[in-house]
Length: 107
Image (cartoon, rainbow, N blue to C red; front, top):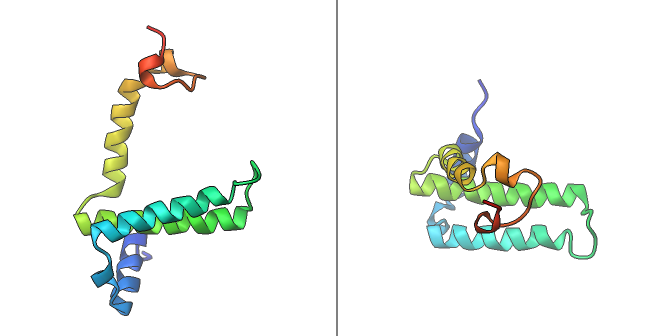
């Protein structure tokens, strides 16, 4: 079995002794910075350069994984937990095909 993404990230960071720089605050800042760089891919066009978009997505995912690991959080589980909350806010019968915020959906 090949090492997981989390295992490979841990090894990469450990080899470079970078965990000292990975406080939750620094990782959160890095996520926001990389999200801005992702947005920049679409600054002047609806279709960004796919290669660059993939690089920025990888950077964001990397920092999210590192933050979750540092906080002892199972990233997959928090996504699934949030999905359940969002399902309740946006029931299919009210939200299908609509982009309104949950408090503006029809009754």
